[in-house]
Amino acid sequence: MAVSIVVGTHWGDEGKGKIVDYLGENAQVVARAQGGNNAGHTVIVEGEKYVFHLLPSGVLHPGKVGILGDGMVVDPSSLLGEIDFLRQKGKDVSERLFLSSKAHLVLPYHRILDGIYENIRGGRKLGTTGKGIGPAYEDKVSRWGIRVGDLEDEKLFAQKLRVALDYKNLLLERAFNQPPLPYDKILEDYLGYASLLRPYIADTSKMIYQFYREGKNILIEGAQGTMLDLDHGTYPFVTSSYPVAAGSLLGVGLGLGSISNLEVLGVCKAYTTRVGEGPFPTELREEMGDYLRDKGGEYGATTGRPRRCGWLDGVILRYAARINGITSLALTKLDVLGGIDSLKVCRAYLVEGEEVDDFPVSSHLWDKCEPVYEEMEGWEEDISSVSSYYDLPSSAQRFVEFIEDFMQIPIAIVSVGKERRNTLVRKEIF
Ligand code: IMP
Image 1 (cartoon, rainbow, N blue to C red):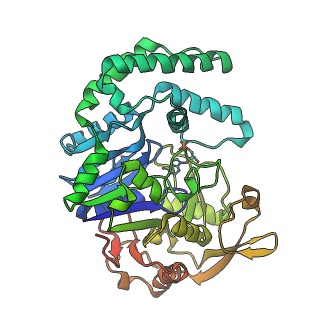
Image 2 (cartoon, helix red, strand yellow):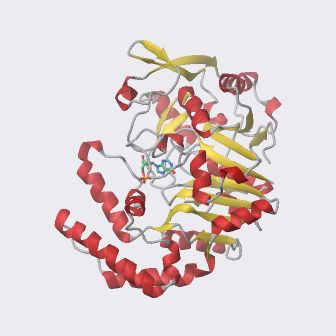
């Protein structure tokens, strides 16, 4: 019995979906803890591509229990679409998927307000995914939110919607000069979703606790990444939830003291990317950035936006190790670096003439961080069909071992391609 938390070490898109799908084989329960359909996790199995936004990627394995935890914000139409998509692919999750009644609902006004807020910011846009995530969490915190469990009682839901929508329409009309949203239509749509979602709604925190006590392996699938964390990321260019490891336990309702066997697996891409606005010290704005984007297929799985690309930021990786308490690492997309003569990893920053090796907490310093690089020899070969770590070219092994040495954390998994079989395991996680 063990709990493994998978976290992104940078700004998301580290390839967590693939790693979680791989680890899912040895877990009996796979869970999402926070975020919503802003996430986009791509998994390729037997040539078939699956993109998950809300469902934990591990549900692709038959018989695994999938949980959408308490800390999530759930857009019901998006969730029902994913369940339906899997059904069409012959993968029915209806008996084994559970949705926390404490999770919050994303409502149509959240998506509209997400767009309005971005417009108001003008040149200081956050570059959100536009899925209404920030406004849904804003309502949760200011106690205007409506929870999944409220869908179970039609009368109660109708009352809560009335109060929340009156307030939101006041905002839309008076503050933003927009037309009000129709109560009847939203009520009808959401009661329709309610009848389809009712079988999935459960007290998932209690379920997870019981599964753990029964000796099951539980895999908590992080979404987004450390630097998008509301508290620990590059605020305000962050998401509105807690992608760090502590947020995972909070988001599934598991008490820290009840777990004796916890692994925190940090998933780190062999180079760094970010989608949306905000600081990014190792960003490559010239040719090499385009090369990584094209070769790595670095376009957002949720929005299709081109991702900004740069060399691996080891300063942030070290910061992520501290904030999350990372016990093992998975290094992904190593194959993308093939064909580059000289590779770089940022090991420190030069900030106002001084070398620093921790990520500065003060935001006014972020744009002043100049990367200090370690340069390494690259490799020519296409490594995407290599099936054992020791068959990698020696310079690829040196790259992996440099990071391991720099981090003093074992690299348990090296991923060299999109398929499950392109996963080189150096240390078993479960
Ligand atoms: P929001 O989560 O839609 O509010 O967007 C806030 C920031 O988080 C933006 O920069 C998004 O691009 C980023 N973001 C949110 N979810 C993901 C993700 O799953 N991967 C990468 N970036 C994300």
